[in-house]
Length: 337
Ligand code: LMR
Image 1 (cartoon, rainbow, N blue to C red):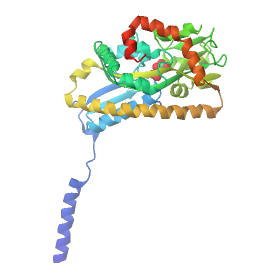
Image 2 (image 1 turned 90 degrees about the horizontal axis):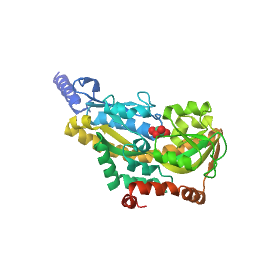
Image 3 (image 1 turned 60 degrees about the vertical axis):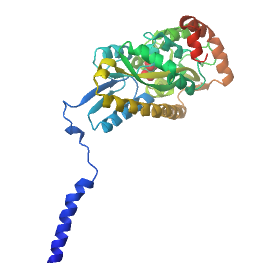
Image 4 (image 1 turned 45 degrees about the vertical axis):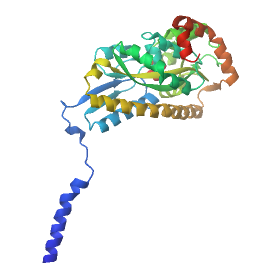
């Protein structure tokens, strides 16, 4: 009888202790909507791209690290706003975060146009060094004057050419064709120099324009060419690595200023972590998607050699001269040029 009593007592003790020791289940739904800060993050690319994956990871980590108090809602594929609408959506408060290509910000901050110069740096580290240094700060300050707080510089990678007219081995091989570009004075000049007709177009309109033959080709990174199926409606692709495509992750400044300091801190730390992850992931995704494109055997693929790339870079020198005249020698020196 005494033994039974002791066992019952022990059982009671264990039941009382277990909930205290067990890891607490986080019930995010229990955060009252009034306490929740919702951040709408809009971008135009697919989910399975460096930007798409990193945006989701950022949302997940923010939720975990704020116990569900900050909810980042990610809208991919331009499902909320097209590239040409994103900036207005941000300034009008319809979304709070965007991550546009640097090219698309170059009309607001002309210095950003320099990163559209073909073959600016031979590898991604060259770009990262500049973004993470003084030049990056100067760019961020310029954006801050326009109510945008820069949280990080993300990569998509190097751009490649595709066309349905002919293989591309030399800078004038695309002459006479029509090519989609992002809005950027440097990209416009780049294609004019190649005797190509550049047409500005929203990213999510490109597939149909290629499929219908309204444009002959485009330039983009492998992850975008793959996830948007451009390679399915193009005959030729050249791995030229001729231009850089990267993003600035931006949050609306007025919204940012209203965030409690502890959430700002978590956000900055999380973004730094995600940025490092994103840059590594971009390289992996590119390799992955390039293999998938090779494996489909549905597009003819050329690759420029180091010597050929040097020849192309020489061809593009007038763009460098024009940009240097515009932005000044001192800025070019800061870029190590
Ligand atoms: C494009 O418009 O081609 C790219 O900027 C899309 C993107 O965000 O990568």
